Amino acid sequence: MNQLSLNQWTTRRWTVAEAVDGCVRHGIEAIGLWRQNVAEQGLNETVKLVRGAGLRVSSLCRGGFLTGPEPLADNRRAIDEAAALEASCLVMVVGGLPGVVPGEPLGVFSRDLAGARALVAEGLAELAPYAADRGVRLALEPLHPMYCADRAVLSTLGQALDFAEPYPPEVVGVVVDTFHLWWDPGVFDQIARAGARIASYQVCDFLCPLPADVLLGRGMMGDGVIDFAPLNRAVAEAGYRGEIEVEIFNADVWAADPDTVLTTMKSRYADLIA
Image 1: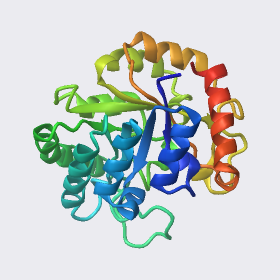
Image 2: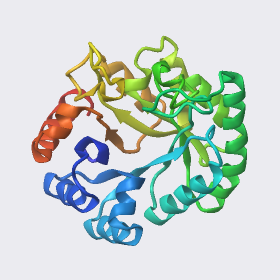
Image 3: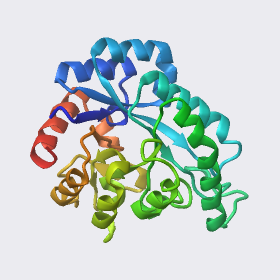
Image 4: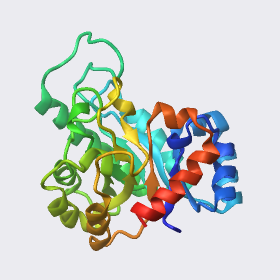
């Protein structure tokens, strides 16, 4: 259970201070933070809260969107924030097709998928040395293919590993997220290939049917279609010993009492993950 981490988005209506307090009260030793919440709390205050509570920061979400306009300055800020928080990694959601904005109607955009992936490679080449100098590990997160257009042109773990390969594992790693990867017939071979590059293991379930807003199709473990045991085993056999984050985007979970959510989360984690 000491690997369990609360990704802050699971209890979205909690502030950083409330989430830190919730972790302490429920005996959870790590937390995954989101940049907008950290900004609201204040970076220095967040650092004090987390360190005062004795929590580890399993990840900072998120950097990336390297296919958008002028992404490097914001990513450098994200790297600096991750360094201050001593986060295990900075999660990188790399971005979709240029001009396609998540949640907004299509305007002027590019259909050049290969060109978008080239922008990701170029952005990494700029950011990896900056991250390495600050002791921050970038973690490329492949997203389910339904998010390829607007959020991530990396859809498989194999693709993410290909993009990470030019860099040392301690500088550029990958995220294994059950929601995004459970469907991939090659995922077990790619987890074995990843080995020391696994920077984060994130768990939640894949709901069926998906809601109208597919971004909110993540469920509590056990409420969807994922068989967790083979994935847990593969990640452990690859050598991963870091935190395991529960990250859930779900309107019903967000509306529920956060303490109840944490109680359920711990129970499901014990039964299905640990």
